[in-house]
Image (cartoon, rainbow, N blue to C red; front, side, top):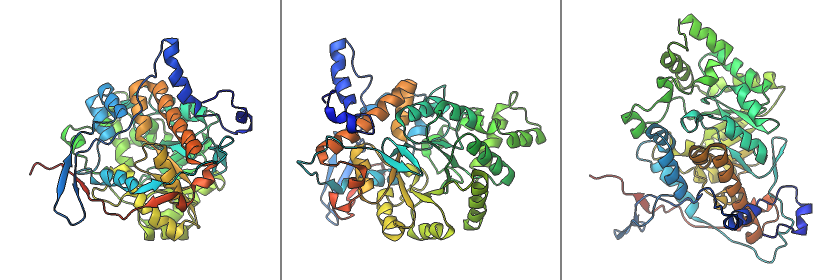
Length: 445
């Protein structure tokens, strides 16, 4: 934690680890760290050893401090939307379980003083192999919506990914992100003119990678959201990205909808174009790739949400530039394969043919390392920064993400890694069978 470490001059990123020292020192100045970023597992589990009938219930694990504080700050609707998963949350559980079976093997007496956490993604040199995952309707978490998130992403030089379900206009988000690297996540309407308009706006605003999400033509069945009628767009909240689009404005006018006078109908029309419940299929992908390439002058096109090796092989055959291995953090299909397990399968099949990224279940630096060791080149995090945004706006996002970067930097120092590339090695993990003996105790039946 030596702030005057002479090796700082040779580093190409800030000494993120010094954020630990900064927080340790605050007490001397009559201050304290703004909030706890701890993430502890909070499910109650029954542990069954494979086919054994012996069981043990474990209950002493409390909710993570970060998540608890976010729940205190959010409205009920905001909390439900951020925390809800599909069905009984078994995919969410599987995502976390998959990380447990992989253990890091640290190396010692390695000169990590001049380490670097930087990496390159689609031509952008960034501070770490960590990006801001696309998450919609940020205004239900904070009045300024996506703006403070985009600003922090630029400040930390981490890629920011804007969701089509975002609650702020594309151009305004770009302005907040300044010169930061930014990608556009597309939910593709069944309205080609509207799709072209969204992609054109995105590229003109500096979003130079298009990522199509393939797993959310409609929201998964999330019990709390349904029970509470919790859908902000139908309440007239969060449709700003669509309401600022000239093609969508024409659609509203054609239907006689004035968004100022009838925000509920306007919001519903927008989101019903985005999560429309009508799937696209592989036949549409060549058109979309060509459309984006024509608009952007050949910039990268990726697919997000793939879990199947067969799907990834199709994607590679169609010429996609990257794949985000993701199950939408367990929010779409209940009982699905863990995203980390899918990553292993996909890397084995197509890892040398396209750029593999990872999303779902990341809670700390060790999770990032495990995903990299299993073949991902880059990792996206979502709920972590959502909790930070909910707790303290821009300052909260900055604290959460700087803490994650410090965690990552320290892991490199004490784990014996001089570069991100050294983490991309299967031998740094000891892995155990996919037993997944734990099942959540959810049912009262």
